[in-house]
Length: 354
Image (tube, rainbow, N blue to C red; front, side, top):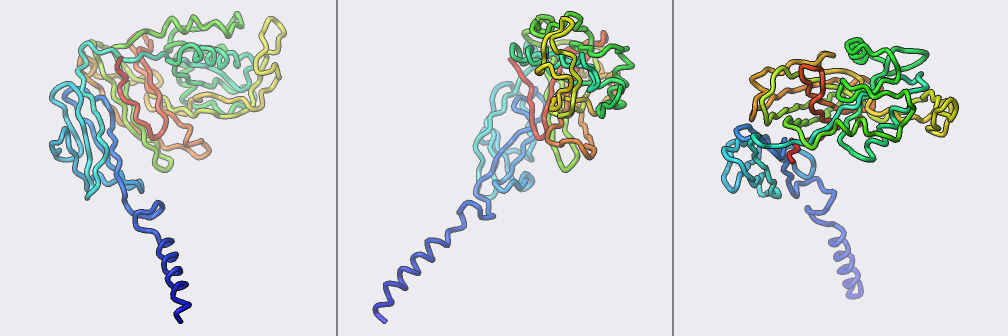
């Protein structure tokens, strides 16, 4: 019996060491909490919303307490009364989040990042159209402040990406030639010379800054892409409107290609007549506004004001949900885009101040 004691002791020790504890990774218990905000920059006098989740991705916001610079908030919204930075923390039971910094800004004198809208009117049947994608690739190599939308024109042969939204824009603008490239919904970038390396035409429209800022927050639940966008103004404007595009990125589909070195054309994509694995960038799937845009009330386009809008889109079957994007553009009364922003699902793209 005495000989068994060391073995029983060793067995008990091993059993205890393998049992682990409630804090081991993989256990379904809460070990920490994460704090997030609807935006990291908030306009003075506006509210910002906070969310607290645990390490199991459970939303515990309603059971949490939030603090601004150590002072307890009532609820999970905060309205700054002065400009500057604020330290936010969230507490759930015995767990406290890491601090989150929120910046409150007054728009007077503020400059925002400026982007241009690059609209490619195209078709899978259009052998002259690959030049538009090649140009955009060259453009983004030099400057990443361009947002692309691919709008497929009237069906010639087979093109599964034509739709009512694209047709409405085409009819509104009077597009008849393919490809047609528009910068900021207005300036046509001719493809007659077949040049795809000189992108100076597009670069001239990218400004050092804008007085209009765009923030976009998106959330994907099942097949519903929802969220909100906020447009901030640091100058007085009038007669503005918004256009909201729903696009799907990286759709692979065969594309006709005439760029094989003949007739003065360069060789693009190897010069093959059909590009089998052609990736279509930001293909327009729907509009959440009219094809001519929706008007922004003039009271919301004055210096130090914002315009807020919620949206929701049910993604049809067959779309790649993870590749969906929301693109928000602001137009003036000359039908010219003043600024534009895009957002993937489950992202918060806050106001970009310079």
